[in-house]
Length: 636
Image (cartoon, rainbow, N blue to C red; front, side, top):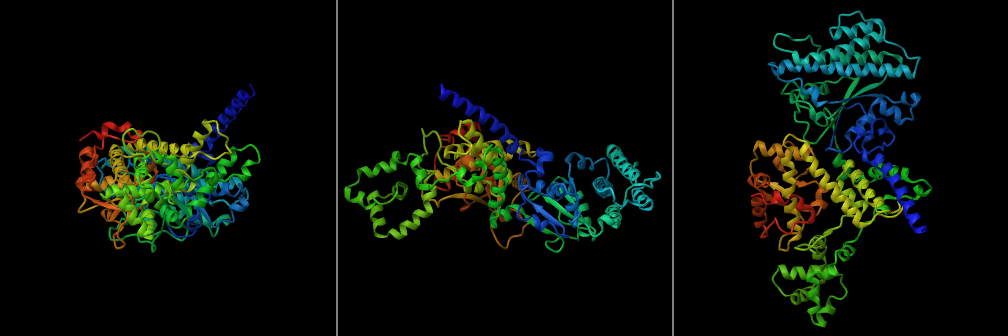
C-alpha cells in the first residue's frame, strides 16, 4: 500500500512540475511569453556589440532569438532588465524603440493602380507615423516614471504636428500624441481606398523622425541619448519598402540609428532608393550573424546553459536546484557504449568472429566490439575475407586506428539497419549533442530540453535524476517531426520544403546506413551549373525557414550567389531521419535531381543513390518513424 501511495504522490508531483515546465519551456517563442520575456532574459555574447551608435543587422534563422534580443534593447526591456529602476535606466546612453513588421499591414501598401514610386512616398509617410508615435509614447511613459521631466514646448509640438500636415491646433504634448495616433489610424483605415485620383498628403522620408528625435533630445532628461530604432522581421517588408528603410539606414543622423532583425536571405535588397547607392558592411552597418557567432566562436554553450538552467531550477522546490547541472542531467554516451546499447553483439558481422580460428580471434581480442564491426564491414565492402582484413590490421595497426577513427561514427548507423529492425536505430543523447543538433538556434534547443523532460517526468522519474538516453533520443525525434510538419504553413509553397526534407533526409539516411566504398558521412549537397529562379526560390525559402542551412563552399564566392554555397538539412532533423549531424562530406547533384526529389521522389532518390553504387528499394526498410510518409516515398 505504501508503494502505491508513493507512486501516486510521485505522479501527482510530476504532473504539477509538468504544468510548470510547459509554462517555462512551452513558450519558447518571444511572442508567447509577453510580459514574462524579460524575466527569463539571458544576455547572449553579442548583446554588447549591439549597444553602440552604428547601425546593426542581426541576422539569424527562425528561432535564433532575434526578437528576444531586440526587445531586450527596447526601453521596455532595458527598464525590466534593470529591475524597473528609472534611475538605472537613465544611466543608459540609448533609448530603444521597438517596431515589428506586420505582414498584413505592409502588404496593404501594394497594388491599387499606383506605381512603386508613389507607394514609396506613401509607405515612407506611414513609417514616419509609426516610429514617431512610438517615440512620443516613450516620452509619455518616461514622464509617468519621472514626474519632474521637462515637457515639449508648444512650439515644438506644433512643429511636429505640421511635419505630418496636421492642421488642428496642437500646443501641448497630450494633444500632439492624440493627433499623431489619430492620423496613423486614419491613414491605416484609408490605405485600401487610395487610388490615382486620391493621393494623401505625405511627409518627407525620415524628416519627422529626425525632428522628433531632435525635439526629444533637447529635453534635459534625454540630452546625450541616442535613439535605437529596432525593426524586427525585416524580411516581411516588400522589396521597395526595404529600399525606403535602407535609405534611412544609409543616411541616419547622430540622434538615431537602426538595429535590424532579419532572417538569413531575408534582406533581399541591399541598395537605397537610389539603385547606385549600396549598403556595405562595415562602412554603413555591422552584420551580426547569430549562427556564426554561436557555432564558430563557441558562445552558444554558455548562453544556452543560462537560458535552460534558470528555467529548470525554478521547477525544484528544495535546495536541489543549487546542485543542478544540465550537462549531468543530459548525459552523453560514448560510441563504444552506444554500440552495446544497439545490440552490436547480435550483429551478423560480429557473429562472423565465432567462425574464426583462435589465432585470428586472439589478434583482435583487445579491441572493442565496434572496432571489430568496422573490420568486418570493411572486409565485406571490399570483397575480401575477414581473415585477410585482420592480417592487414595486424601489420599496420596505426594506419587502421586512424581509419577506424574516421569511420567509427558512421558504423553506429549500420548496426541496426535492415528489415525487422524496430526501435531506436541510433542514439542522440547528451547536452553537447543537443547543442550541435540546435546549431545555434535557441528555440530548437529549448524544444529539445522541454520534450526530453516531458518524457522523463511522464515516465514517473524524479526531476533531479538524469534523463535516459532513450528519452533524449525519442524527444529529439519528436522535435524533428514536429518542425517537419510545421514547414508547410511557413511559406506559400511550404509543402515543397516538407518534400525536400523527406527526400534528402532519406538519401542521407541510406548513404550512412548502407554498406559500400563511399566516404563516410556524406550529408551536404552542391548544386552544379546554373540554377533556375524556381530552384533558387526554394533554396532561399529552405534557408530562411531553417529547413536547410547553407555553408560557404568557396572562400572567393560572392555572398549573394546562392549556388556557390553547400547545403545540408538542419541538424535538428537528423534524429528523425537517422543520419549524422556532423558536417563532413559533400556530393554534387544537378538542379534536375534537386527539383526531382520534390516532384518524383522515388525516381530521383534512387538516381542519386545509384551514382553512389547503392541499389536498394528506398520505399522498403524505412526507419519506423518514416513509415508515416510511406506514400511520399512510393511516388515516382
